[in-house]
Image (cartoon, rainbow, N blue to C red; front, side, top):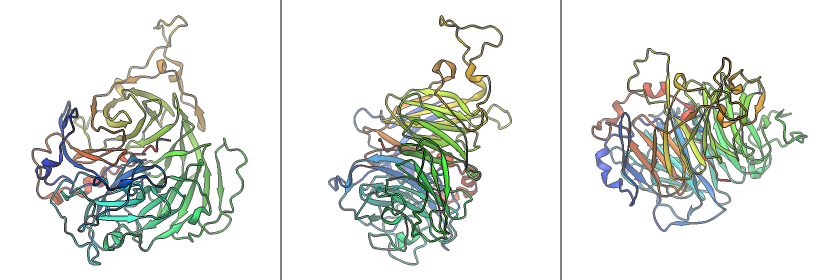
Length: 548
């Protein structure tokens, strides 16, 4: 579940961290695309020797956040988050000098879902002027800047993206359960802009800026929801702020339920929802009292693995352990469409900026492209050799020859998998070749009206479809396939200046876009924030896989 990254200041002094970009043997520090070369500019990870297992394995999520000046109005930039799966926990973390306020994205992905961070120090590439000794603990610290929030083990860490320091500037530890997902609201009006979901099912909302101002290692001034699992004691899998929702948010759980909360209502929990009669059917129940959660959506049997809001908040997509993508009209609480993977669970999803397409990835090693207009799969991509754990549209990319006039729009998107590879793809709908229907003998027939039955008409509203035959759907081949880490990958984020990739062990790499690594402006604030706002993409947010 993932948004496009809001990183104005991110790449201000690329040359400063050249020594960070050291690749292990067998890994290249660049990859080529038709528009030029992407270069590894930064890399961050947790300090060695501080990790051990606790509370079981967790999924490490990373969120890119841009905090503006005080007052405590939330930043206007969009944020993005990546999912990184990690089985390690940091027993200790250093609290270094001040840093930027990292904002979690609501993804999925791209999307409105966001991921949490847990206890290990994940190294994140910071591009820009070093600010290792900011004023952490100073109440006058305004938190302006760009931050990474991530979880490994039993803690959440915040790193200053614009610092060359590999270590985080803030750590928040949880004693009873691991944080497993988080989300950031750029439009929060009361300062509470960061959501954190725990393995125990508990959810907290806090002010990211307040956490940065505090010198301790515990949450401060937090609002607690679903305390001790009073409403639902299964693991939180995803949290997401509802776009234009005025403080409302959703929490998805491993038992297939999703709950709607309103920040301005009592967080004590109202467990008085009726028993679910049919676990296989979608159903919605509303709270009988004016308490949180205000509604329960039963989505599916088994875990909800990822959620993503369309950029306007009108639709929410979910992917689950049962292998189905489901797309709902959020306001009307109605299932619009959906369909099954070719095999196994779906692990991640992301929206295109314009809300026309949805990406999914999962255990069938494929990337599927869904059309909202057609309500069906319109393309599938083959190129990964293992589970696809993160997908995202690149809302900052423009086709090199595009003059902005033609109607043939090209979408660039990326995917990462447990095969340690980053794949980039171009989706050009006008160029897709629709397969023809094949006769029983297997030879194609080219007579009039012989197109595949999959393309004959749009699926009725509210229908969940089986997976179509692969012969009936156009196949995409990756533009780029590059092994970027030694460990399985769990997420990616596109920013205006770079592509960030994250492995499930908590190592993060920042790949500068063509041309940017050679000429970095030292005045990072000169980048227009309005251009980022225009690019605000829930689709950029990655729904991370928890490798269930």
